[in-house]
Every structure is written in structure tokens, then in C-alpha cells.
Image (cartoon, rainbow, N blue to C red; front, side, top):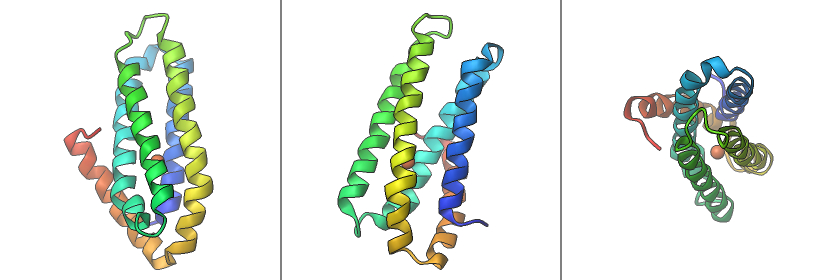
Length: 145
Ligand SMILES: [Fe+2]
């Protein structure tokens, strides 16, 4: 099992590919929207239950900020999902959501990852990788947001 930061980076890449498909392949949009919701909400939930929970006491302000960013992503996602697929507002809504998420990913891979490497041991990071995977699976069963 890879360490947690590698798994998170992998998820970020996968979510980027999903956005590419959503933008460029109109015929699969309905299915991809369902996948995006599942991947994104499961990913954020698992992150909060693992990496953020571990770092919260060590770097409270940074984690507060990251949690606020997750809440902002959730709010934009809920707004986006109210737009019908064939509405003119759909593509701008998708791009707004993507912008919000990619800004968060960039902060996370920069500042949060650096703090994780500074405060958590390699063993910790590997153990958290396993827990992250389990939490994502659990989230997929229960439709979290
Ligand atoms: Fe995140």
C-alpha cells in the first residue's frame, strides 16, 4: 500500500481526468457526473478522517483553512448539480467547480503535504494510506457529502 500523500495525489489526477472528460465528451456526461460526485465527496471525507484528523492538533490554522476549502467545494458542487445538463449555465458551472477544486488541490499538494512530511513519520504516512483507502470505501457505501 502506498503512503497517503501518493494516494491523495493519485485521486487529484483522477479527478482532473474526470473533468477533462466532462468538458470534452458530452455523450458520457450523465454517468461521469455520478462518478465525480462519488470520487470527490469520498476523497474529501477520507482526507478529513485521516490526514486532517492527524494534523489538526499540530497545525490547526492550516487544517481549519483546508476544511473551509472543502466546505466551499461542497457548496459549489451542490449548486452545480442543480443545473440541468443541457442548460447553457452547465459548462460555466462545471468550470467554476473545477477552478474551486483545482485551487484547493494546489494548496494541499503544496502547503499541506509539506506540513504532513514535516510532522508525520514515514510509518505514519504508510499506515494512513491504508486507513485512507478504507475510509474511501466506507464513504462509497454511504453516500457522504
Ligand atoms: Fe482536500
